[in-house]
Image 1: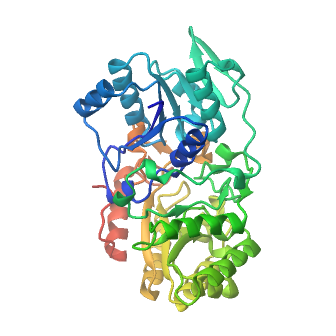
Image 2: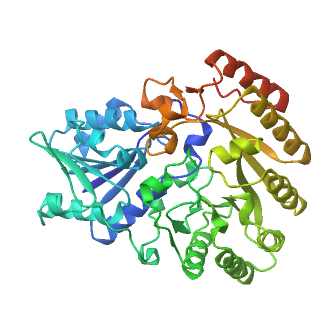
Length: 434
């Protein structure tokens, strides 16, 4: 084996942790294998590994390079895995990447067990790192998109230009991971760069620098047909994991037409996420006819004042109209909310409770996430001026399931009480603070 690609685990395992495979690592794995490297994948959420098992694994296998992917919640566990690797195999080069490391790359590079941090898109950077470490090609300082420390000197190389034509990427090497263990084995990404609306709780524009790129509907269909042939989606549902699948309306309609032409009268079940202002009646009708069974909308709050303050750029009347339209087509509709927001008061929180109850009564599924000022977000970078106090002491508490902030209007105890009121009033079964 040349390279081990590792998905760092969450600290508190939940069903959500293994819903889908780490698609980013699967893309990197495909790129490396196409270049002739022997690659293995390890998702520590789907296949937990004890220290003893890792030691045995490293005793049997010589691994020159380990690549670890983390986001904020999993970053501490990624570093702990790197520490264990270095104890057991000091010569192994440890490369770390993912959203958290991309934003806080200098901090990550100073971890003594980390040899290199990859910033942003990983396929080409990881390929050049493999060539450097395994074939002695080039110089480390000439590889764009990395940060590293050598002899106490920090080096931040030039940013790597994003891959312009993402149709040229190979299909993800899903077989590197235990497909049968995921709730959604067939996940497909049709674009890169995320949503352009710049909500203050989202880091996507910080990471991608607003450079959105779309795969052609032809290429997306080619991957879907490939997945259907190898029967990864015969027993489950195709899951489009774009932040907003319908960002380009005409492209979505073209994809729907292709799905209709290929799968005919027995449409393929699929689901996606998008915004309430990025669908309309005709588009929803086409999506439903081609097999769309579920859509998730980010609603976030029941107060227009709060929606405006977080940069959501939607109207409450759009929320109600779109949710009802979606339900009318028989599409399962999930409305996701957040709690609390920087400008929340008891009044705005009770407005949120009222909207959550109203949408639930129409038939929508309601979910709730704890507002989390992740590195790279406006919330994180402007927390002081927003009046946010962060209660969390460690990165692994940034899991969106626990109350980790207070705002300038409400104390921790009052927020906890309002959260419990919300859970009871809306009839939500899961207490996120457990």
